Image (tube, rainbow, N blue to C red; front, top):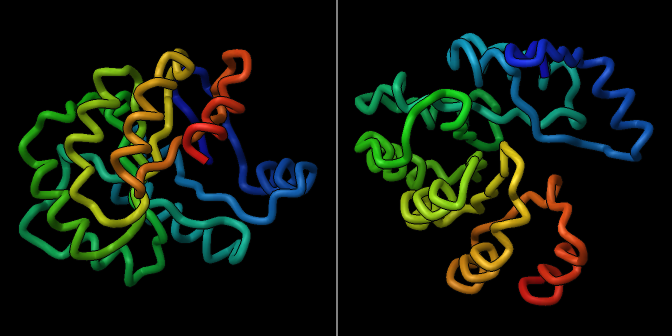
Length: 188
């Protein structure tokens, strides 16, 4: 939600709610683009304010940029107590890498709090790195392809799902013929 800088797309809350209504969607997990692209602190505040304005429709996702994460505090607890329902990571848009050490600290902090996680990946390499980092978390981990080519990951997704019951995959950009059917049959 908000303004996306690369293509200049803008999604106002009221427009999103109209689209949700047209598609019979009651609730949606969301984050303000400001948290993803500009400033996670003020963007997360905007996300939470919108979720409070539209309760039971918009589920707030707090976005974390590891470059700005303070590993000395109780930030995840504060996010949970303030009303966030999940935590999101988007390396492709924020230009950080999954091999940064701070992610190991983040995983320890996250595991204590118990919030579900959304991880954006842009390649099969990032998919493997994300699994290696987030496999320690006991809560659900949703993998979201943030670039094309998600159909190339079907074999990887099946293997990951067999090994880790808490990993889920967003199939929104899965366009290979019968890919969704195959995943349904193999994974559930």
